[in-house]
Image (cartoon, rainbow, N blue to C red):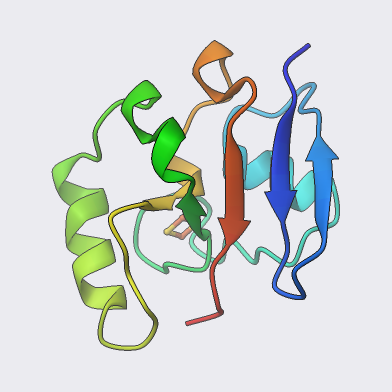
Length: 107
Ligand code: FES
């Protein structure tokens, strides 16, 4: 089992231990975090936006073109940083083990 640290919008940190979810977005929703995932992982809503800790970024596969486009659009409404990722594009696998993320403001 992998675990990662999630900080919610109120600044409260907790441990997330995904079990059966395929993506980080699904895992956050399953755990009751306020992540809408409105588009179901189609890279078109931005409601699964998270900030990945700088020290953990290199462990993740780079964002694809669709994810980069969505993040660019999000930048008009919420802060987008070097650590910004869409949780629906991050598969639950060993690359997430031990990383820290923060749930971004709602777009
Ligand atoms: S769930 Fe819509 S962009 Fe990730």
